[in-house]
Length: 234
Image (tube, rainbow, N blue to C red; front, side, top):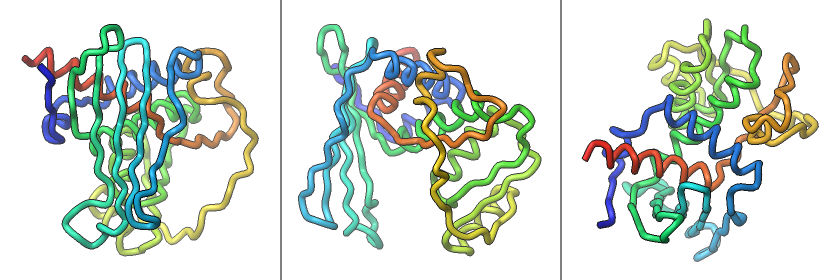
């Protein structure tokens, strides 16, 4: 019987520590060539207004796809601009296992990957965290990063000063009036999965720039973690 998991259920089952570990395993497998994953496909339904994203992946212990609707025209309405679902299958038999809401999974897995990268790449004595942006990803990143580093100070910047100030008040942070972010022009050293897999050493104590681009295997690994937890609770 196919399981359905809504956002509230996903939130009750997904734990940061296990999710961070799952992202390390998933990205290591991706860099070692153990994941089948095509480039994300975006279908333009109506230019500038309606899009459908398709993100499939097959790993050793999980198979599935995330379907994302991106509707900029929903801005200002009660309907979010981004909505998503994940379909999860057994990779050995192809049997469908679950359908689950993917909004929270997307939010948390993105921050979990950043936390895993920070734990591996950031200097052990790093004590200041700067968040560029003050939305849901800023909140999720703060929660995840505090699990891998102790910060003496948290700073937040936003294109809208009011948003930065509100976030700072809510999370005991300091609002910054920094300015724009420019390209770092840093040389590409490795994919983060290569470092997780031990293929390349972490470039410590050098200053590093981690470019996080969410990929399907992260979603599928997170969905498998949620499904396994749901099965245990049953």
